[in-house]
Length: 274
Image (tube, rainbow, N blue to C red):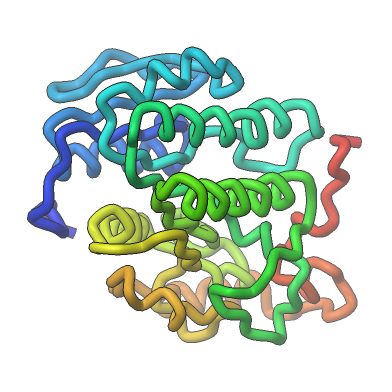
């Protein structure tokens, strides 16, 4: 896509956590168009700061460090934490303690909006032959999905109690192209990821809203009608990749839990890393 901004609204300072991760690396150069200063953080090295950037290496389990990280921040795109199924200890530190630390820091610094990278794995034990809406309660498919369901609950509580707005993005499969038949339904292009995040940042009122992160795919497990107020309109589709994906995977084993449930292979992963 051409890189004219998707919104004329501009923030003084945006914070992108998890900026060294796969999607963080995608959004880091794109978010700069929407702010005067982009502050980026991760537990991993982030390299040197580009023009208009502030860089901070930080563990989200460090409450005082996170409080300092949010000083002067208008809004947060929170991708930080563990992004795959892992043993409980790192998920507890990054996704449970980390998200509480983030929201407490937002409360103390009067940051008004957070875009929270939730996951389709928060609802991974719904079946692939059903379509669920944005109000569907969680059915997590492992410790990772459980931590994202917890994060959505944190967002709900901080909205009602302290008025911090959140858009929880139940992100599907955001890769350069879909890798298998399931991803024909769950795929989210990088350009649509940007559209989704920018719409979530700039919608006038979101309170605590949930929206599924997907492109305009022909088939889908998810119905985003309940989040139309955010203004996200995907422009890409998995359809151009269909023939190649179906050629690679012509048959589906309908007795395989990865084919029965929306979470795919995550439903079979051992949560203890065994």
